[in-house]
Length: 346
Image 1: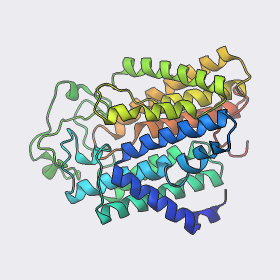
Image 2: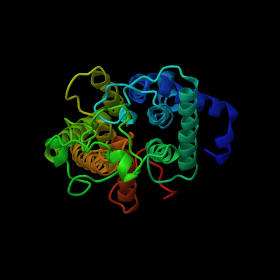
Image 3: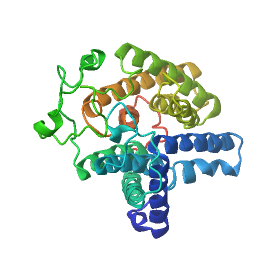
């Protein structure tokens, strides 16, 4: 990769189209498409077929990279909610409704496209300098920060419980005081929701520490096993992402697990140097790293999602953290490789 790719016209056009597509469908449906494409691409890789390039060039490339299509969709939702275009019936601020298709309004598509380009730029910059984290996940994370700043949303929001980690106001179903947003000057609006909960956990069915720890460990183990058996770092991620089609269709209590499965898979292969290493060691490493990634995602959502107004993706932030941790373990000699994560040339 080279910084000259930042201005490759054909890639900018593809990134714009991918971001606009994410806006039209909604961030979550676009991400689900990414998951199915990863499954197709990784299945082809395992079968030694040339179509395996689907993963790198399409699923993680300019059209459907989460840093482009998902991040573009999330930014477009933030913009549409600010303009009063959304009335999705979502329980939280409408800007958090990443499952809502935004349709064909030209200005909304343009915002999605521009943030698609931003996600592309962040990804290319990370890859060019071999920065020690998942470049796509960092693109999703920094893009969300950018859309909050660009559209005037609070970075954290007003803390209404006993500190940012306190979810008890949600459990008590406390409602924000009427007119509070206009009075407190923190930039918050009701986003089309007549009454909002004081605290809005990212996943109401997946926020308790013990529950998050349990599913994170299990999915980390599953990701590790799939990676060790197939040699594919990304197949378990694709399965996790595709499973969100059920969440998007309204099936209750579907867990969100792609940050656990990806870091579990990568951690397993990094810990043993590849699929020919010890399966037991790989499973242990994948389980532990999946657990850490899941818990970090929960920590992130409590600080940066539950008190503010837009979707700042906890799984993407967790993948950044988990991939960085893999690099650190490689640099200090605990792991023989860093799997797919760039290593600053170490």
